[in-house]
Image (cartoon, rainbow, N blue to C red; front, top):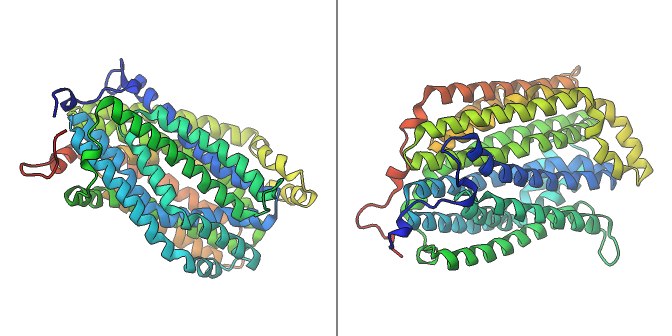
Length: 484
């Protein structure tokens, strides 16, 4: 290995920025926030265009999407932990381990995606248990099965993006995802409504458009990685083989991270299915409110990825104080973002529904249905305004903990909070004859508020500073890792 490759890679997003500074955070986070915002927009586009297609498709798209994210989030969270490994090895100056970490994420993406095909026969049964109308069940099953069959595409795209985000080249991820949004939007319109020579596929067309956009992401990432490897002599191809010692670290640290996403998503998915018991209008109103919530929340996930990456890099470089400063700077930005959006939802909530009404106007029946739902949706948006700041705290502090390797506590906390505060109470209330939609939403708001507070308390203990992920994952003498 050349002396140059032994040194931590200083990348464009981090140059001329002091470790732990607000400038450093913004340079890494802004592209990821825009990237995650584009992914949120991709999901929202499906809902917006389906609003003008049919009420059944609108009611089915969010449960179908959330069920898919629920089953895919364990492998997704495990694979995403490549960000932490790559960032910590980057900070420690271990390029060989960075390359091997990326390959393990690629292998996991391919294998896990293929295994998920076995879930296809189970989807309709899950929706039927929820008690939703038969038309909604059929539409939700179609959407879920199409996305689930293409899970390898989604997971591989995420794995390849870690090559750039883990090394703090987050602008690359942003541009690729933004291009994916454009492709998804165009294909959504063509395939949902059957424009020109394209068949009218409805909700299936929305899912197919998403998968085609992800295929485009993979092609671009492969091209950019190939060009980067040629320019920098990064030892990528030398470490393509499965590394079982490193895979074990993925399951030790990454699996709890993936399980964290699973228990969170599964809780909200079950919450949605229980709301379906109140009727199609209640479910459609919740879908619209969650769509607006997603536009606020999903950018926070990109923000969380940046925090996890920077904290991991600083801890790998032996700079725990810089990691702490990064987290508190993130708190300021997160509270500022959710505070402003919450204020807007409380004062002018109708603006948030304008994209949905624009497409609904193309069909009189859809427009009438949306007008009928609007008062209920506005009421639910007040809940979103209430808990959004706590949502930001939960994402920021849990991301900092995962970046340090403290992945078990966030998972256990989320599991206990989502099920004991939200799911179980909502299940009990949904079976009471006097239950109302706002009453069920209170369980959701209380869960998020508690989770955000508890993540803050865990971070304040400082136990995360005593975890040494690079030490326990670095190759020992006799390791199979080779030098370039």
